Structures are given as C-alpha cells and as structure tokens.
Length: 309
Image (cartoon, rainbow, N blue to C red; front, side):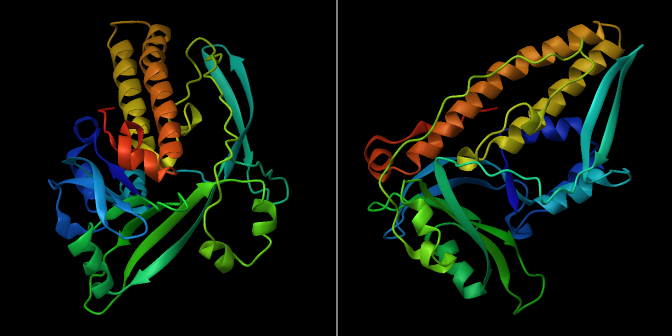
C-alpha cells in the first residue's frame, strides 16, 4: 500500500533527523517524480476516463508504506503481534501487560455502509504511460455517473530494470444495499463487474467521546484516537501531527515549562477538535465520492478540497 504525505511535510521534516527523512523520501513509489513535485489528485468521469476536477495542487510525496516503516524502525526493537491485555496504575506511572495477538478464530464482522473491493495490478510501461499522458502518473480518483461507483487507482512501485512490470492497486467502492448478501454469494470477479446499487444510507453518527488518560500517563494518538476513512487521504497526516504535537508538549514539560499532566492536556486540547473535523469531513467525502451528479455539478470540498492539517 502507498500513502500520501502532503500538508504535514514541513512539520514532519522538522521533527525527525535529516538522515531518517532522506531514507523516508527514498520510499517514493516513483523516484523520478522527485521530492519537490507539486501536483493535484485528478477526479475523473468513471465512464469516459476524462478528468473533470482535481484536488488543488500542492507539494506531496507518494510513499510506499513498507519503505516508511523500514526507515523509521531502523535500530528499534519493535515487538509485532502483541495486544494490550492489562494495565494498572503504580507509583510514578503505569504497568502494562501484552499478550500474543494472533486470533484468527475470534474476529468479528460488522456490516458497513460502503462495500469495497480491491486488487493488486502488474502493469506494463505502456499501460502506466497511458495514465501518465491522460490522467496522472501516480494516482487518480473518480466516480461512475451511472452507478456512482467510486474508483481509486494508485501506483505502488516502479521497476528498476527495463522490461520489468510496474505495480499498482485498484480500489472500487459502492454504497451498500439490502441486496448485497445475495450479490456476494457470486464469484468475486462477477461482483467486480456488477453495477453499483442505489443509495440506502446506513451511516450512524458516533460522536467523539472523552477518555480517562489516568492523569496524563496513558495517551491515544493516530488511529487509536481517531480512525479516519480513506476518501481524503488524511489519516497518516493527522497521525504525524499527533506525534509531533505530543513530542513538542512532552519536551516542554521536560524543560520545566509545564507539568507533564498539563502537557498531555495541551496535546489533547489541540488534537480533539482537529481530529473530529477530519473524521467528519472524510466521512462526508465518502458520501460525495459515491454521488457523481453532486460532485460534477456542485463540487465537493470534502472530496476535492484541501485544508492544511
């Protein structure tokens, strides 16, 4: 998978060592694009392939997730596959216990208002160049005017040797309907070819909730604090801001400018309203991305607008 870093590039670069930032930049899905490329994200008519609108142009990096992970975890002994099982207060802090977290028989399925399917693609240089010449080299989004099916294509990796394939991913989503259970009894390839169904909204609002941070000893950041859907590409950018703001407030406490408890309160005061707005806007983008007529005629700030994080 790939991620787009855009509105938080300056913040991120200022908070990590230059050599680590250089290694992060080496994870670009297409190194030929360079670090200073300014580009938007095209939105196409899903029936014709023609570009209709675009997210405003800005400096952005499209990076491979595993490349970012490799750059950031160098020298760190990270324990994977663990689950927080117990936590208790002790003098001066907390004690936490972890257990192995591989439980393929205890998962739960929950029905979502949007159904999605995706696949990995191996593409020739000729195929990728078609997108480069007519849409965009790295990614595009779009909506089909008849079915309101949403599409997201993005490049994952660029070959280093002539004749080798490019790797990309294709994501399709559509508003769920009451007929989906029967639909998904068919082979996935047949489902992939089906037209989208009419809109039957099953979204329910889940307001933000307060949590007990045990006087600043337990803190939530990133997806743990605010899980954001994909339709604005903002999730990782807000997680970066979380980490940077938290680091800044902890440093301020360590330097004696405030107590640690007040530092955590300041971080949460910054994070909560910012994250709530991001969650709600991204959710609206999910609605708008499945309504071609609205985006085409009225536009959609939620889907195509860009606001600094």
